[in-house]
Amino acid sequence: MTIMNKVESEDLLAELEKIRAAKYPDIPAELIRAIVHAEFENQDPKDRPEGSRLTKKLIDDYLRDNVK
Image (cartoon, rainbow, N blue to C red; front, side, top):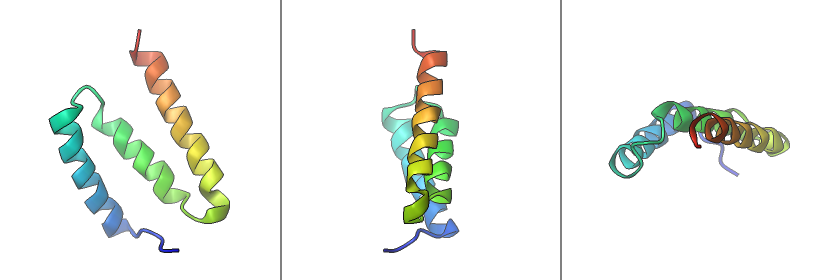
């Protein structure tokens, strides 16, 4: 298993921002950044459930607060 390092996560964020801006401008860049951060900080196999829980919470909170 390869764990992503900080430089790789920044590269991933840059690419995701290009896609978000071009195709999904209504989704806040901060949400994407928070999701990547939650997953990056919880990459170790024992921490993945926490990363998934945090990601789900971020998405649920965004939907609750922004989608009517």
